Length: 550
Image (cartoon, helix red, strand yellow):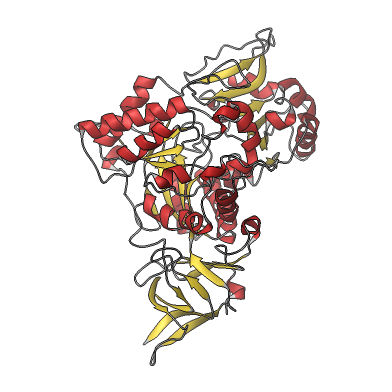
């Protein structure tokens, strides 16, 4: 017998049992799947391989997953100004001026990643005018929930009138146009009002979105990602185009999609379906449509905003503000969307960050299950950033999965503490409490929002829970390295319903794996994030590092 690939001279952590599972020295791969785990690395007598991959003793683990990312958006930011390292407003304006100098006079200047807390304020439209020479400018806040525009962009959107005061356009419910003390727009728009500026650029051409996906996919492969969930397409302030699924299909057909992808349509892309119960898409498409490489996942609904932008819906006011945030929409409407999607057979992913939003989402899930029990469904709450002990128990009782982003603790942990105050800081982005309650906690990045999306950096933050200033944020919520590795692998597979075919290295499982320069379950925690990703294999084919695996 001849197989496709023989992986040998490796330290294989299979994760097919407790702890790291059985350890082996090699794998036999055939037709995209693991044919056999080889204890000593040798092929059985009479078996040969078309290709051989000697790992030089390197560690091999199942491929990494990201349960919540924005792949198309991230791919587009790779062509925009990166403002994540800016520490002053002058640096932002300088970067805008430098990019504007390379563009035609009427071209949009686009940037992403600024943080008003770090900068000491938000970019102002008048200063953006001077920097960009009158060109339209749109800059995305690192949270993804706020953006800033120049005067020209504001005028095109109807936010700023010809007189220099408030323009005629209305503000969508769940959004805000920030005004100064004189009632004049500053240039900053929040949450559901962001499409006022974003729609000046959208819909993006399907071909352009497909190219952005390919750019992002190359980065992901180099970081060991073999599966990602795109958490919101086709609408809202995160969608690129109503034809976004077509862009994914095009990227796949071109060979540019190197990961297995689950896409979530946002609630705005769903509607009442004639002759059926609840909400859905035309042709009866719902969660599960597609194949192992590309399929439709949960319906995404935004309940609130973000902590870093102080737009999350909280029970009590922010520690450093005189308000408690707000919902994205009428709570009764959001509740009805969750129930309707559940009745129509969808899995639901509810974006809820503040404790008031988390409680509202759990109420909706409880109502949905009471009306039509679906005990097998894996409803989820994205972020679940501020969760009390009693609400942790409600998650477990309802079987709702939290999908937090551990790397936020490092990137904006100090800002989040400032937002909620020390007395609520222990409730931020919990992990161990959920695990102890019997829940899985899939790893995710929310890239390009807020954080470095590299999965090993996410893993490091699960273990350390340190802010950028070195403060331990909720040390009781730390988990060990093996639990963190399982969050990247087995748990991301489980939340996607794929635990029977990926997330472990065992006979019959998809041949998705990562070759690492060190054993991340044994190195010091501060070294996890810098561990080298030597190579990535998806479905038996190298997507990264093939030149090193011969």
